[in-house]
Image (cartoon, rainbow, N blue to C red; front, side):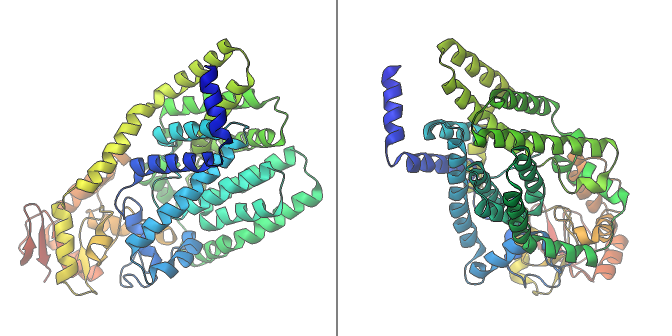
Length: 497
């Protein structure tokens, strides 16, 4: 045991220990999330870097104001580089910045870099967030730099610095308001509880507000220009379209219990902490936990329109990370081997329901599968459409495909995967038109319900939709009495009369 301790101490004193830890974590992230670009949300968000992309497409005909600053900055390299290159450069740069911030954050618990690395590695293994389907490392989109700014802000605030972390905190909001909107008051509450001076707190407020302006102004512009959404529309968004982010009733009950255990462990372990940093983190955790409970209360009171602000976003992803850091902090603080073993058993018992080993294997298998996957019939059809139809074409197809725009480079009538929040009523009406106004019952069946309903549309309904939305071609599995201009084993492309 002493030999291992000396070896770890020697590693910690090495000038390259931080960089070795960073490299190790980057390789883990690559193994878990290094899929081809674009993947998942990147199929949509990276296309937003081209402000002139598909001007005739309804979904892209307005600016994405919620990610305005991200789109503005990264549209510059996207103007002369492919989105694949921009995506990889963004992943490499911001994944490493994020991992560096996480390592520095772990060091604020006064634990060595190797312990912080193990903590982050385990957190990555169980997929970062316990509930809420949130992630920090997994692709390249606006929330990735937003979390980088937030993590560095937490590091700097814990050192009792004022101006720089306040600017970073504001930028986390400007890059992704749903991240910053809850981080800002949580930090403010933590600083107030720690009784920083009025002058310093005023500086924090002023600098944070100024750094938030690039995010606030576009959002206010959208609110003024947009159409108000009804309670029924927000009920649909919360309970059917995006319950994994918005509906606490949809969250895993086991995950909720585990989060509660982690929070209580963290608070108890840090209750008598002497350092400002650990007291600051303790209050910050309590604040984001309170916001989470506020979200649960909103759901209980059916305040669906307020849940769009995502008050449950930060707690499920940061508390597990803090739990790992706190476990190593407490183990180092306790001198008795027996007490260290007890801490270890508590950690193992808490993590067991999250299946970190199984999740890690699953993530690596998904990464491998993404690189060796062969084009399916949908991809083949979309590629044909991109090469053989006019650029101003509008395609009538099922609105459930995330890859449609990237593969086809053509407009579609609506996307279920990419709602327009400034026109929710029209978005919902377009979905209804393409599904024969079918009742979409739940998140689990929503995509299959939509695809089945679309496939059952009659020829007369297809013509009616074509005339209403000026569609030129139809992509579907269903047989219709229209000219077939391309087909695969499962899909047909029709020329609409």
